[in-house]
Image (cartoon, rainbow, N blue to C red):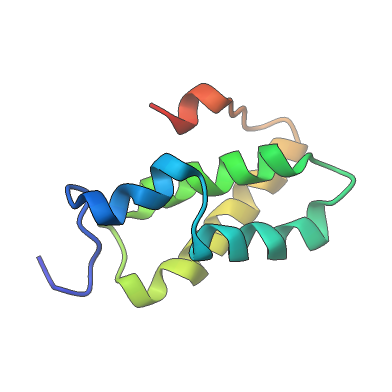
Length: 94
């Protein structure tokens, strides 16, 4: 595996997933809330971002993660608003 790709098995790289925070997640949530404020609660936006990060870890180069995560979460939030996607807190911890 290239060194630039996050390793799902490394506890340090899983930290943000477990805590639902970290600079990448917080930054993406802040940006998305400018568009979805008043439409979706911040906890729902954070859930979608955390799930997206979990889905992308090990799949994209580390330096590309913020952009990929923003695009993925943005699309999922649009789908959620249109009733095409359902997410729950349980999915975050799956």
